Length: 279
Image (cartoon, rainbow, N blue to C red; front, top):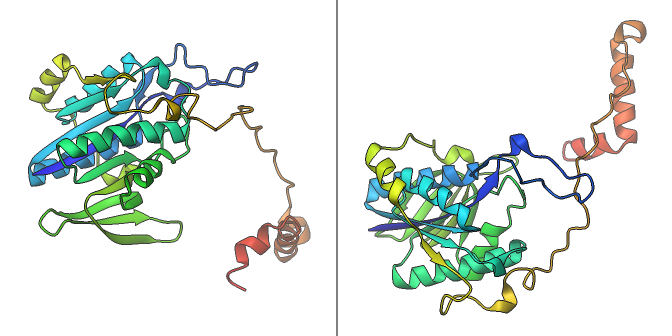
């Protein structure tokens, strides 16, 4: 039986993001919360493979009690069980502390009910670090495949997974042993409409809640602010780019206009970096 675990996060809808000009922090009050879109597509892929192979999908999320809504949404989309890691002592966690907490939970679940594939979204749209999935893989000593756009095959008998992953130049096909961790692009699977039975079940679903006091899970030195060495000095909105100089090719000729543009780009160090591999 196939067992997939999907880590999901509730994030502010970035179409409504504002920055506090005094503190430089994200303004979350009054901003609608949604399931992180990359996580939703990762979940859709996990559910697809559950239905192909038979098995179940487990959800893990870290955050306040309000995250229960997002776990119910995951159940609505086909997940079978959910864990919410929620405690004020986890507040202020950076990606290092977050990956520690999630890794501890996943490790304990795996010991009770072995996991075949751990799914993460490529990144969260509020932090954009893409660090938590790889951080969990390192802590659990799992092979990791990032930027996955398609899972070609999961062979439980051979204990292997074959994945297409996106790079800057081409698509790679990667084979890895199970269990493995995959971080997913949106192309991995379409988020489906919820079947009626799952929708009804999700309305009553209550996830298992884990706190700092849950026995055998967490070391206080590695969670929350205490376990977070990252310091954010400032956040803000980058200035809008200014318009460049306009060159009228009709007045000076096409060849002269192109030569002028290339000269300016080369002087800025742009052309050399772009064409360096061609020369």
